[in-house]
Structure formats: C-alpha cells, structure tokens
Amino acid sequence: MIRVQARTEQSTLMAFASPVLAIVLTLIFGSILFSALDKDPVQALHVLLIMPLSDAYNISEMFVKMGPLLLCAVGLSLCYRANMWNIGAEGQLLAGALGGSAMALQFVDSNSVFALPLTLLAGVVSGMLWAAIPTFLKLNFNSNLILTTIMLNYIALYLLIWAVHGPLRDPQGFGFPESALFSDATLLPVLTDQGRVHLGVVFASVFALVAWLILSKTHLGFKIRVYGSDAPAALYAGFSSKAISWFVMLFAGGLAGLAGVSEVAGPIGQLTPVVSPGYGYAAIIVAYLGRLHPAGAIVASIFLAILYMGGDLAQIEMGIPIAVVGMFQGVLLFFLLACDFFIRYRLVSTRDQVA
Image (cartoon, rainbow, N blue to C red; front, side, top):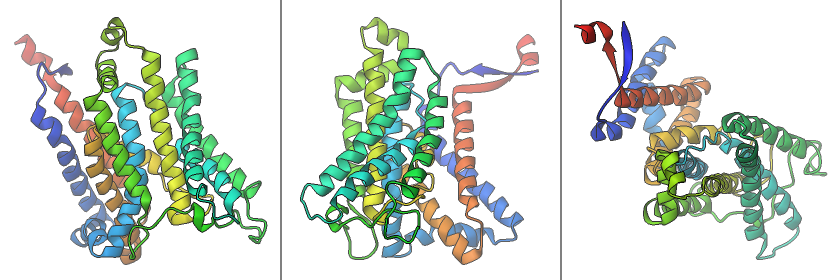
C-alpha cells in the first residue's frame, strides 16, 4: 500500500526551484503535443517562446499583455496569502472595464483634464464593488468564496454583453455590439512610438512594488501573513479577520478593475464584447508561479504574456490552434501544483513502515 505522508522539513531550495521544474515539464509536454500534431517541436517552441521577443513591436505587445496579468496576479497573491480563495479576478476585471467605459462615454465630446482620472477611478471602484459582493457573502453568511467569485465572473461577462448590445452601444455603430470610440482625453498615453504599450504597464509595476512594501514592511502585511499561515494564532493575537479579508479582497478587486479599465482605455479604445482573453484566470497561474510574491509575479506575468503572444504567432506561422495556449496554461498549473505537493508530502509504503 502507498500512502501520503507530510514531510517533517520542506526544502527551501525546492520551493524556489518548483516553478522552474514545472516550466521544464510543461515544455516537455508541449514537445510531445506538437509532435502528435505533426509539427516540428523545436520550431513550435521557437515560435511560442522566442519569436515574441524577436523585435520591438512584439516586445511592446508582450508588455501590453503583461500589464493586466500582473495587476490581477498581485491582488490575487495578497488574497491567497490570507487564505481568501478569490477566483473572481476575471469578473472584477470585466466590471472595471464596464464601469470605466460608462464613465469614459460621458467625455466623448470633451477634452477635460479630469476625463482620464475619473475613467480610471470608475474602473477601480467598479472592480472593488464587484469584489465586495462575495466578500460580504463570505463574512456574513459563510458562503463558499470560490463558488461565489466564479459565478460572479459569468454575471459580469453577461452584464458587459448586455451593455454593449443595449445602453452603451454606439447609436451610430450600424448595430455592431460596441460602444463609441473613446475621446483622446480618456485614453492612456502610449509609452513608445513602436507598438501599443501604454501607461497601464507602469501602473502594474508600481502596484507590484506597493504590494511588496505592504507585505514585507508594514504591520498590515505581517497580519496578512500570520492570518494566512495560522488563522487561530492570528485571532488569538487580536487580529481582525474581517478587516484583513475586506482589505485583501478590495485591494484585489481594485487592481483587477484597473486592469479592465486600462484595457478599454488603452489598446482597445472602446468597450467591446471581448475585453479579456482570460487574463483573470491566467493571473491565478501567474500568482502561484510567482510564489504568491509581487516580485515573483512580475517574472511570471512576463512568461505568461510571452505564451499569449507566442500562441498568436504559432497560429499564424504554423497553423497551431490557439487553444494550445490554454492547454499550456492548464498543464503548467498542474505541474506546478504537483511539484508543490511533493515538496510538502512524500509517498511512503506501509509495508516498509511495518518492516
């Protein structure tokens, strides 16, 4: 008989090596998959991982995708550190895009200096309000946070679809389900002449630094770490579980909302039915790949952004289905969780123990 036994000591080295090992195993799996699809694995991996960094335009597009991934992942990292299993970053991102778009459309014919700040603020507040719903249900009715946040993702999606088909649809858009183009006053400034990389990447980097400072340099961060590691000890010390839960959830919702409004006020320039290709879900992988640390999330978000870019290029260059990228993300998370499992536990034979 084989059973699982907790390790008395966990390897610190393996804790940091686990993401690297998971990536290597994912690449091996990918090579097997590409061979099964009658594609050259070496060429496919080159297109998937190297070509996104081949020129200035592709690099700028990689940063465009990195921004929302990093914003969502930083917020989720704090949630997971506090054992608040928020799976709703996608819905909070869409809520931010919807709220920010509603505000931006008030300035279509305006050049007000307040247009962009108000648009961004509306997106952040919308994301926070969307995150407040499952938080309230969790703290007051002990509802399952995983289920409520997942369900709210779909509600946010269909609210957005309803809005672009209804009240926010462009009356001069020939019936297409999209809003009017935003005015220049509500668009995020572009940082380079080549590509579409915009101020949202700066926001993501700044808030990653802020989150790191909160976790490592403040009493609040100490409370979050203690509460996530040992909730009874935190409660015995007098830490407020409700205050910690509200903070991490609203912080995550605000960052996801900022990611959403940065998308519509950045590369898209209007509200459309498809704002996110799944950034909120991919951010869960980014958070775990980055070891639930804001600095690690930066590196992990770059890797996932390269995968997104590589998936588009692989579809164009080699005819590989775009769904392969989603499979890569799922397999990467599977291997990461498997590696983490064997860091914490080991398989032992009961026959050996009897002997």
